[in-house]
Amino acid sequence: MVMDEIVRYSICKRNKCHGSQNWYGRISAGGKIKYVSLKCSRKEDAVQWLSMMNARRFSPDLDVWKEKNDKKIASSIIQFLSSIEASSGYNSSTYNSYCNRLKSLSEFCSVNNIEFINQFSREFASKFSTSIFLKYSPKTSKELLRLTKQFFRFCDDTYEMGGFDPMKNISAPKQVKRAKDFWTPEEIDAILDCAPDSEWRLFWSFMAFAGLRFHEALSVSLCDIKDGKLEVIGKGDKQAFIPINDRLKSEIERFGGLREDMFKRSSFVMGSNSCRILKIAVEKSGIKSIGEVNNHRFRHSFASNLIRAGVNPKAVQQLMRHNDIRITLDTYSHLLQDDLSEAANKIK
Image 1 (cartoon, rainbow, N blue to C red):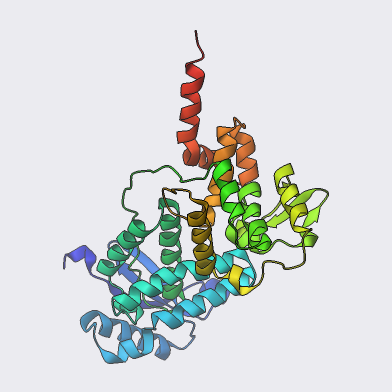
Image 2: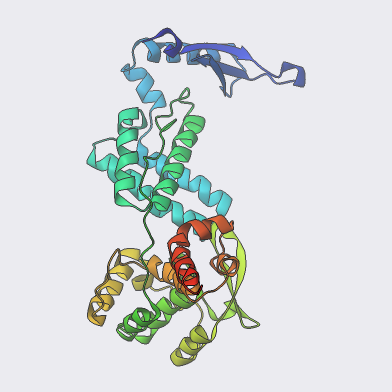
């Protein structure tokens, strides 16, 4: 171990001028200092923490340290999600998204027999980062990586693990950017015609003709339509009003109107079951689909077909509810390039 990698521990009091009596742990490593609140006012308790951390330093496998400080990953994920629930609300899209994404971390730990947080070494952190980027799209992978880093920071702060953060400085592997898969309007019509029933057809229509995300479509109800627009609570619990175009209006009328909580039954809510039903419809339609078949492809198709129809990218950004137009341009730039080639050929 090189000298600047040695971690040293000490205790001190801070903010005494403001009347604070709490003791802090002082962690020095690599020329940097971090303070951890020990949440105690007695020096005896602070000394006990110092002894424990030094025991960890010289005897990392000491059972007494592990018993007091190490936590199971499964229970820690539950506690982390509880903190999200408290801040975002159980029904929020943020909470539901975090639940689904952390399944990747749970599955990875299960496969690699990782039960406790301290077993998740930097080697495992690197393997996990590589595995998710091989399995998911670049955007989803980056979100998973960000959430995993947030989880381990939460564990360090909550359980006072002395700065243990295996995901620190783990970066995303470089990937070749690939074009988003989408269905043409004709292919979407063929898929809708093969829906198992009219309710599934309408559910897919909200994603295909309004660009809703899967969880946003699940929440659609009669009360969400106001003055010809659809009220949507999207990412980060942001409210938006999306115009209902003629095609979506005709699909709603074809079904007979909306009902309250119409997509709340389990067959819709379970993402794996919903994808299975969609794949059956795609196969039945006879479409030789290239790329992944999932519900989110309807949303990409909505944006892609708008771009292909010559709609201004700024309008597409607003309909897709992207925070920055650069997201829209980066995601669908390949389609814009096709339009540029066509435009250039018009010069005589």
